[in-house]
Length: 306
Image 1 (cartoon, rainbow, N blue to C red):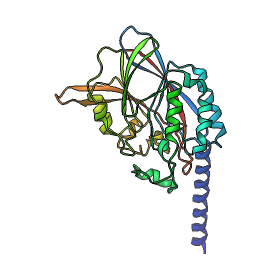
Image 2: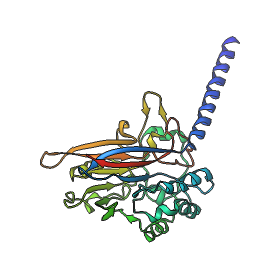
Image 3: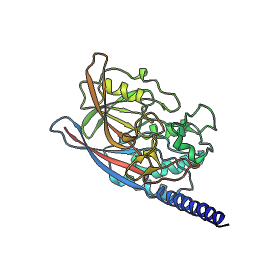
Image 4: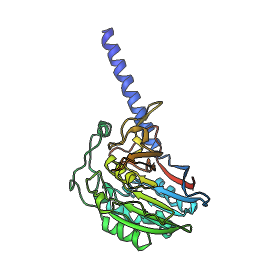
C-alpha cells in the first residue's frame, strides 16, 4: 500500500510539473521581444544601415496581443525590412496581418515564403517537434491565399525574392539581393539565382526561409556578405545551459538563432565566410503554441562597417 501511494504521489507530481511547464510555455509564447544587434558587414567608412528582420509570425486573427506588438514595429523606421516567411496560418489572418504591418510596407522591403504561407498547419503530436525535421510534404493541407499575400506586399513596394534577384538602393547604398523559395517544402532551387557576388554594389545579401546547409553552402560559396533566414523558432523549446534541442532542419543547434557565420570552400578550394542572421520568429504552430526559454522576437540589426 505504501509503494502504491508513493507511485501515485510521483505520478501526481510529474503531472503537476508538466502542467506548470506547459502553462509557462503558453505564457512565454506571448512575451514578444525586440532584439538589437550590430553586424560589421559594410565596407569601411560607411554609415550604418538599420534592418528589421521579421519571420515566422504564424498569425491567427484572434492573436490580438501579437497584432498590437507587430503594429508598433513601424515606429522603428528601419531602412530595410527583411521578411523570411511563415506569415499566417489561416485565410482570414491576411487582412489583420497587412493592417498590423501598416507603414512598414512603405519602407524598402524584401520577402520570401515559408510553408505557412502556402499551406495551413495541421495537427501533429505537440512533442513531435522535438523529434527533428518535420519533413513537410507538399499539398497535405488546405492552401492559403499566398498569391494575395504576394500581391499585397509587392503592390506596396516590397520585392519578391522567391527564386529572384534584385538590386535596391537602401539608405543611399546599393544592395544586391538573391533569394529562394522554401527549402523545408523542397521548393528551393538555388541554381535559378546562383552565381558570383555582384561586384559593383555595397553589399550582397541572400534571403531564404529555412536555413538548410545546401543553401547556406551555396550562398557562402558565391560570396554573399550576409544571409537572412527564419524557420527554426530558435529551437522553440530550450533548456538552461544547453539551449535548443532541435532546429527543424539540418543546421546545428549552436546557430539556431541570432547572428553567426557560415564558412565554406568554393570549387577552387578558396574559403568564403558569410555573416548569417537566423530569426527565432514571432510565433509557432497553433497546434504547438508554446515556447520555453526562447521568447518570440523580431530583430533590428544595425549593419556597420567592417
